[in-house]
Length: 217
Image 1 (tube, rainbow, N blue to C red):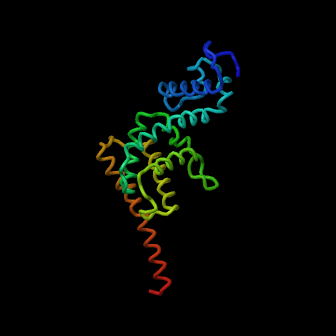
Image 2 (image 1 turned 30 degrees about the vertical axis):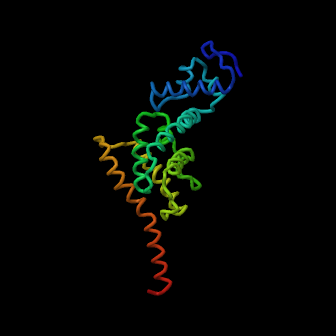
Image 3 (image 1 turned 30 degrees about the horizontal axis):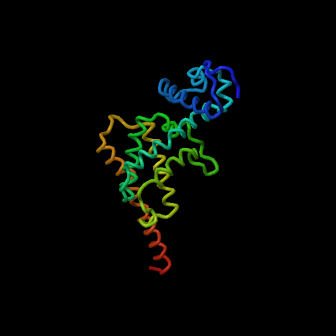
């Protein structure tokens, strides 16, 4: 580990260095916003850009690490507020509403959902894997018996994508004028809740159509 810089207060090891860089990144994001760059973080920390490059190879890598560092606490808060909600559509709508409210006070995880942080659709990759894992963790933590409610693996995957795309859309443009909590939940229920309710029914209807074709009805 290099020993120069750090404002005269050298980290004791690499883990300490990374923790201090992430703390500086949060401080810089709070001050500069989502346009924060690696050089901005270096200035906050009182080190050269080369020092930060030793631990993070790019601004995207640093901001992603900053977001990941905050994901666990955010998911824990969401899980606590969703406890006891077992209806699939209600859980997804409430999960989205709670997540959006939490993201309003958490600038770091929101970076995962920005359009300029999502990958170009290639080789079946619809969004960045990191953002998708965040949405998957949200759905997995819900008190919903997805299989018992009639949802298959493919349908649960659809719900995960719906959650991710809805969060991304609402983060980028929450709408004007701002909706009240009641209005937001009603809007999410019409937009997302209806889709969640329709997934198992769509599967049953498809089976019914196949059955009718088989029997010649």
